[in-house]
Figure 1 (spheres, rainbow, N blue to C red):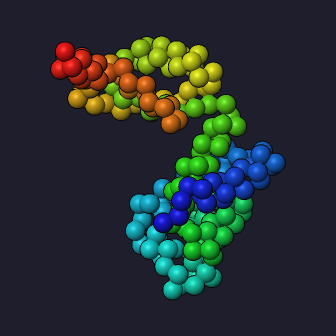
Figure 2: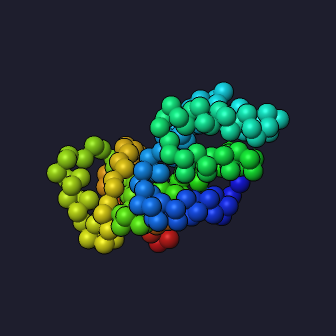
Length: 180
């Protein structure tokens, strides 16, 4: 399996082109579209991953699917390279890294917010605004519910986790009581 370091190389190359021609957001949408299809359509994935088909037939599949999806030649060229180098299985990682690069260039950050219960819209907006002040970037909120938290929230921002859940506070209190 390909690692993120190699995926980063491909994503950075695409970002360089995207910044130069101003289409980096468009390329992200196209990559996400193809990657979604790649992950959900088993036959497509198996045909593109299987090196016994040869690069040419696999590139023809990319051309056909890419044309139907309206992909730019730049994104199709990246897919051709991944197929030729037998690294198409890295596509989800390339897309993920590319999304991080696009967010960085666009001055935004994705926050994965886990709440015990559904937040009302105004509370979610307040929290988003507060986090934007904290990270000094536009926040794109991805919300998930997990009732095992009991109360509070857990926010994952990049590699950092900010845990304000009641469950974690109760566990810390329990450890304190056990220590005496």
